[in-house]
Image (cartoon, rainbow, N blue to C red; front, side, top):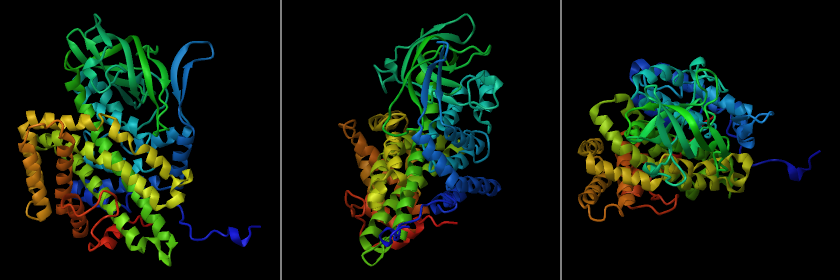
Length: 545
């Protein structure tokens, strides 16, 4: 029998058994804003079902199991033959199967597909983030494969399928497949033009044999991979299947799995090619251009994935402080804690609104929106992913020592938080990509200015920030050394313009005052005390259904 000193009191209940989508006002408003009426009702039904699954006890159990039992490499079978397989805990397959079944690898053809998928990705990533990697790669491969219409006709229905089939078999004999990516090599990293993997053409049109390595191969258990290699006419994109049509294994030696800081449920590998068959995608020498469609889509998923981590961290912090009492009352009502929570909520809302606006631009597909994306995606990827780690760290602190304990789930969020800032090009790569777009694509800057211009006159701090940004852009002296400063300003102005147009006044006011007007400190919890912070926190509260 427990003694009275062990009676549990003043502890927050776990945040489980709730609808992750239905309790996220910001995401719900974005879906309503960006989807046409004929699509909205159907999308809500699917997102509600996914939201309830994401907030369930079952999904939380799968997430814990998948991270406590990380993937294991099997290089050989019992007879000494190389198999190069990655074994996952059953919970991983259940998470992945649920995501594929919810359509998180298919967006390119259905009406409002990118908004619906981005909302679903944001919801389901909150259950467990690691398996988002193969989902993202599979979804993002579609635009690259379309450079070869015959290949796309075979593979696209499998990539966008709602059927998940684990195990390696000839791809065209499966009901659904996953795709990974291999771009970077140990000697070059982000400088993919320094790649040394060789591609030797065969007599069969479009077929090559690859010899070389990849230092980071994402999702090595996938059915196929988009990779870069040096063909006779330069760096070229290839589709490399794991299993050939006759059922034999394509040479694909997994040397080791990476021992990563976070993302423990997901496998990343070093692989070797030795006479490995691959199909050319696009023209020889156009590898970077061909694969950039995939890279841009995965970068948007980095933004959306970071927004998901932020939302989950804020939800946990607000939930805990709502149920925790300290110094004579609920912790959430203490002025200083309220300031911290409101500041976190503002950052989270800005990330979600921006991610969903970019997804809507993909659905539009027009020239102006496509130009807007070429500038806005790397800028958003730079800024939102960088804001994720400090936000999650601060949210963890809101739980005090409880947040530092593994059972809270917060340490897993914190380990995951830096990931999206590194993958698909780290901060400097994104900043330099923005400069490249500014120099070469005036239509992109025009589209961006039209977008932020829609909010001009609504807030004097935003107007001043736009003027300051234009002054920065007009001065090209030493622009590379100032790239991070410039890109940060671009991202903040874009977020501010969206919040001024679409967020409640108290949220837009807090953002413009602290992020654009200079009335905020370097740490979270330094918003002007005169703002309506209680309403901001109440908006972020994940009310249980």
